[in-house]
Image 1 (cartoon, one colour):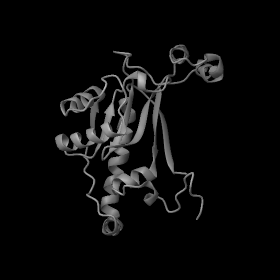
Image 2: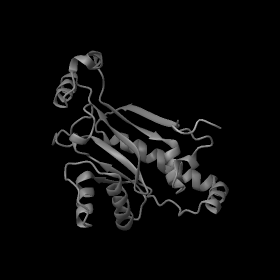
Image 3: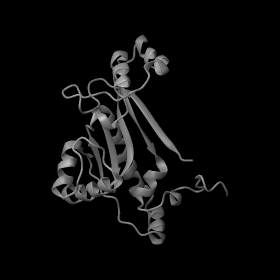
Image 4: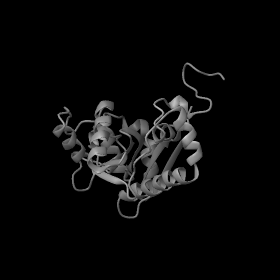
Length: 217
């Protein structure tokens, strides 16, 4: 069990508008925590020491290709069009911290092959997608993207992934009645608390943690 926030919005011009919402939301949230919850953070720090989160007034955004280059230059073996594993994400977080002095950043323009079929491809190069992930201390807290709102594109991309379009016909047909360009993201709030406070274990971010092995108390 966890507390999650899902956000979807219409896009007027570019999917970066979704990134703008993430930027404003989280910078304001981090500012509020540091300003108004100093005593609580100090109490946590006494029990579970952590370094204050470093973040920029305007959240850093780097493209996936740049992240791959940074990892390769550091001697990490990664595939140019492949997904990043947990170790690579943590290493990239360290590299970003060293280069840009921030623990909070966005990685944008992921390869289409590593995103769901309903992710909108980039207009200038369909090998890449209008998508992003957000990281805190080298760990992902958000996955977001522009969704495909054109039924023909949605059906084609589903077929390319080996999905039976007939099995999702109602989903595809819903877009035939008209839908604006739109996108969004999802975030787990306990995960944000865990990484903001450097707790190391998500159970410490929940009053009554629930998992497959714990139902009580």
